[in-house]
Length: 218
Length: 110
Image 1 (cartoon, each protein chain N blue to C red):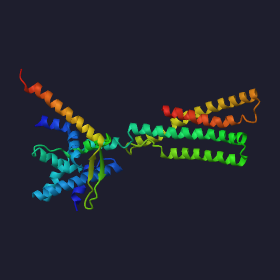
Image 2 (cartoon, one colour):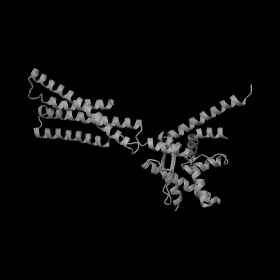
Image 3 (cartoon, rainbow over the protein chains, first blue to last red):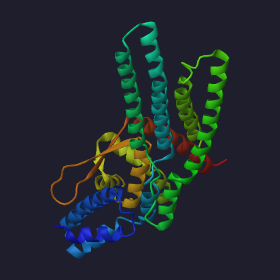
Image 4 (tube, each protein chain N blue to C red):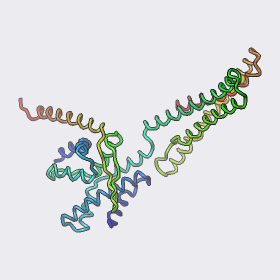
């Protein structure tokens, strides 16, 4: 039933992007067309006349199709909220990484809990932190193509690769150089070679924090 | 009639909000109500309605849900939100004020 109307709608939306939002709009338009068509038939119009009048009542949907294209990506506000949530999760995981070591030390030295249990607790905290990071990277929204052309394909690839890599490399080298320097300074000054290796673990956390700050600024 | 239709088209969103404030509705039904209320003197193009629906929904002034029609296509129903009602009130006040002012400016002589 209503096959002719359905075909007219497909024709109308010929140049629209093939997305779920487009399909929803198509269904809405079709439903309204069917109602109008039925009313026109009830008024006594012929089938062809009713179809023509119904389609004419839709008007110019060029602007509508344009909006379907541009609104495929998340709005700016939504992306900002998404980034903030992502940053929060990463900060929490980084803190957990550091705290896991702190708790290990506290448990073994201050509270005298056995080594095995303390290490298990530490590893559990690390597991939670790692889980958070994995969850975060999976749910993070990425650049969505505006259409299927080669240009958009390239933009998508580029945005996720080169700039980030370069930045990360520089950050990594800076942080690690500083970490090694601090390690040696502290070890020599305080003669604490037995404990100062912790600085490297802290270095990992610091590197992640710094990388995050740079990402947020982007 | 062209200035009138421009002015009315400019107020499409408020017209929709006023309609939805009475009850939930969908595209064609709203259009029919407008035709009835204006004694068939005015009819909105559906494209105008769809654009307005999208803007209103993005501004969180209306929400939408699908009907459960089993034949043909499902209808998209819209309902007004609290924010929408607030906006409607404000727009009503604005319109009445503008009406009064413009009246004074072009209708009163001297």
